[in-house]
Length: 278
Image 1 (cartoon, rainbow, N blue to C red):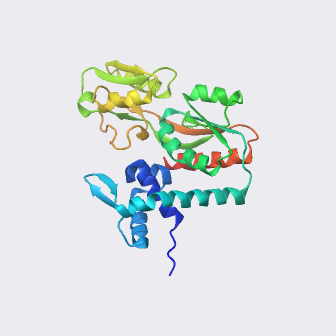
Image 2 (image 1 turned 30 degrees about the horizontal axis):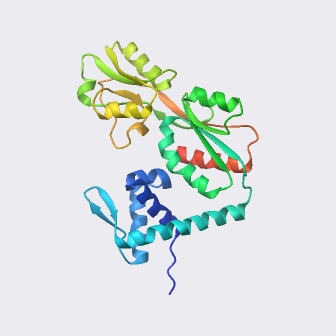
Image 3 (image 1 turned 180 degrees about the vertical axis):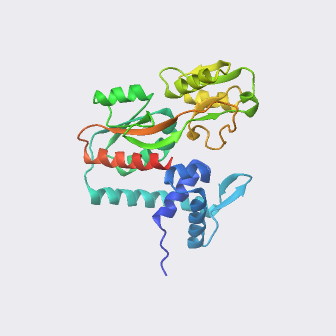
């Protein structure tokens, strides 16, 4: 009897290996962690052998998992090329995408990596920058698709989510609040400073940087608090309670250049779906 390996299970298997954990893999395959666990159980039942074992919190491939991995990649590559061959509309040229830093880590290793594999003739160009710069490049016809931050009432909003405070509870109770912020222009910087000023809360700028990674490092090190969305530190709960003033909502906004190629339109649909799952 022939055993068939479902491609959706193989895709989740590869995503877990590449991401290093089931939690991070959910950002690539857009299913919940519990659904991902069930998928791996189904795959192990299909091949009649364990594929992972745990070492603390880490998932380690068994010898069977190591043997399956390169073959799973081959199967997925063949599947994806077959889909492109059947649907047609390949773009032999650049697909220019703009992302704010908040989305770059997730989408670069997920949707955009898969798009590049599906469309080998398309030259994927990605620009990571602030929302004002990206929108200016889109208007100048230097980008095709942009996913950025916008006002909560933006009619092109893909999703509206609250801004939240991140940091250590002890810092939030400080007489003078140390904060970390990005350089201007930054919607989160403006919201945080306006909220603190409105509340009359004393603060000092402990870190000002153009880098989201530096901002994250400062907060994780306990040097300061900051204002972002829940995406900023997905493994840690934001600061709760009434220690800090309330913040406004923010929108994930997708903008597309006029008259896109069919392949660009498909890319925009993939990014839209990914943004909904964030």
